[in-house]
Image (cartoon, rainbow over the protein chains, first blue to last red):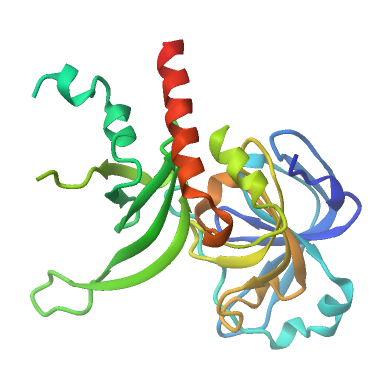
Length: 96
Length: 96
Length: 97
């Protein structure tokens, strides 16, 4: 069973179907991969400016909106200066 | 031809008789594949080998008559799983 | 069921998962489930300079529904076995109808 079990209480990056990137602590999940994220922040990427972090708080994300969940390596994440990163947002899922 | 001769009674029989043959697959997102079919299931998930993918990319600014220019990108993959929800059609090899 | 079994035999092999948002992620297949959700370890995103979003991510869970392709290691796929298993499953399906 491929599950999200190993990600509970870890800081994760959630990529949504519409391309949004949200980081937070995975507080819980269920069979449909509905996910509860604590202390979550959206990371808004753009070509012209550095990454902007918008605090969202406690979020419940519906399973069908989820594209990917990745475990964040705190060391690497801390060493990256978000203000200097320029990138296009992640493209939305097409024909999902 | 009579269905008792061809062994084809339902649509999936056509795919079953194409196993180990080169097939043409049309996908959502202006993609096409040719490759040798090794497995499929009821969702039309496919496993193919010796695959060539063709992607049609329409460049709306490329033409002067407002028609747009279609650029074609090709690539090869040795062994590929294709998720069924992207599949539009599967066509068996031309019989001689 | 058949495809799920195939993926299970490929556990611990390196695969490349291409998503419907054109992201391409290579990694070691750690597990799959019946929805074909995929767990990848030691991941690398293709064209990392254009996709720095996952720089700090070393392993991930990919929802099956967003997968377009998975590139498999051909040397670990027995095509004859696959074709036989597919014919068998197709026969069972017909019998059940």
